[in-house]
Image (cartoon, rainbow, N blue to C red; front, side, top):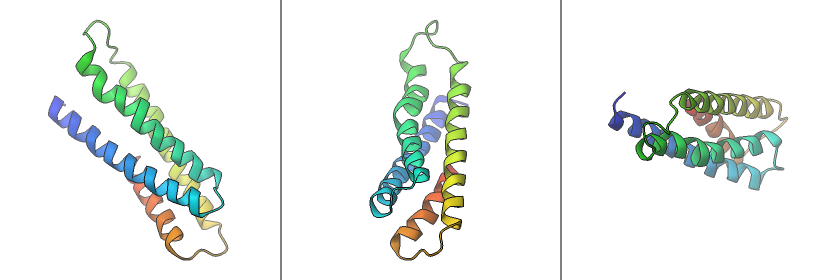
Length: 119
């Protein structure tokens, strides 16, 4: 994958992570803060700061000798596992709700769908 495609992919990943960060903050603020939403909040922050910062910037600024390409797939796998666990947990929590109405429920469903897309 060339550098332009790599940065475009990471940019899309960053955009989705920021959107999901906003949605999960809304869920935590407007519901009784389920642990599933808090985990997705952590996952969004993990994706934005340590993961994407390293994956997008390390190859450009580290010397060839100081940069380890073996860390890239490990960070990608950890991030994918976080997203998979997060959106599945939120979907199961939403499915077990006795009632749900209004904007918060639509945001929960949208967050599950976008979390699956981010995964």
